Length: 242
Image (cartoon, rainbow, N blue to C red; front, top):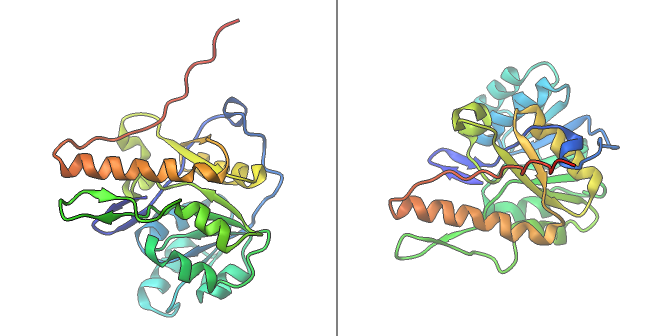
C-alpha cells in the first residue's frame, strides 16, 4: 500500500469480469471484517457496506469514540468488536494495519480456515539515504499465507493510497488494481469489491508473485524521494481483432 502521512494501504478497481478473464465469484462473503480503523478502514468500510456487505471493524478498543463514529457513518449493517471477534464472524478479513504488525495481528485472530484474507500491506525499511528497501525476504502476502495456511490470501489494494480509493477519478483515467493469490474464487470475490469502487481488477497469478506487486511501492516511494514523483497504473491491452 502506498503510505501517506495519515496511514494507508491499498485499493480496488473496475471493468468487465469476462474481459478480465475472471468468472463470477462462487463464494459470496456477506460479512467483511476490517482489522484496523485508520484511513484505509475509513475509505473502504463505508464503500463495502454500500455494496450490501455487513461490516465488522476489528479494533483493540472498539468502544473508542472514533470507532463509534466510523460505525455510525458506515451504516446500520456495521458494528465493532475486538479484532479476534470480528474475524470470527467474517467470511473475508481485510488487514488494514501497519505492515510490521501483520504477524502479531494474524496470529491473534484465531482460526482463519477457509476465510478470504485481503492483504494491502507493503513491507519496507528506509535506509540512511532516505530510500525505501526490502524488509522481508519474500513478501507479506506469502508470509501471511504461511501464518494462516488454510486461509485464502489475496494480495490487493496495495498500489495506491486511500485518497484514490475515495476518488479514483482524480487519477485522470481507469486505475487498475493488481491481485495475486492461490484461490480463484477468493480473487473473484475481491475483484467484485474492486469493481464496486470504480476501479479495474487484474489477476496476475498465485501468491508467490506478491513480492513483485509489493516492490512497486518501493519504486514509487523512491522516485518521489529523488524528486521524480509519478503514478503508475496497469492498462489492459486491446484484444486483437480477428
